Length: 194
View (cartoon, rainbow, N blue to C red):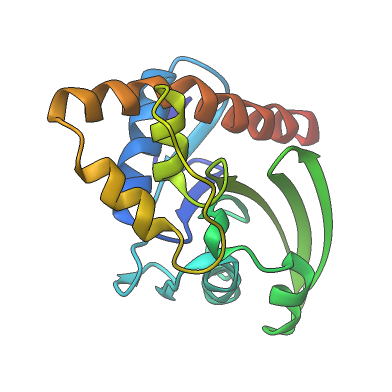
């Protein structure tokens, strides 16, 4: 992977800065693999290239609807499971027609168009149950209770905050391979399509 402003794939997030930090670290660690990917990290509540980016799948579609007038037209979107809504329903709210295919567990390829412009977005749902924090905790063997639904991540964030800095770093590093496996499924699918 190369990080470039002229790349053909853009990384976007449907939620927090912790997710962005970890995913950036995973990509940096594996930067010698696969295709050219640009890192554009719109943050919730901030102005991005295409306007305000909200949280979850709905926020990603709102962003794409605004940003599609600019290249690229292929996106990898990371969204915590707590923000999951049926993808087709979320797209319809913005007048976007899509076809959705689950290409791996919690990894979806979504082809769509807005007017005469086509796009491809891959959704990677984060977390074993709820969010990236529970994935990070579980990756290093910490006991995690199952919490789901909107707001479930608060409990995992509280559990994560109780760890020492050394434990936090160990857990984060333990999650890299799990996360990169999902990213590699997407990148391999993109390479097949080009």
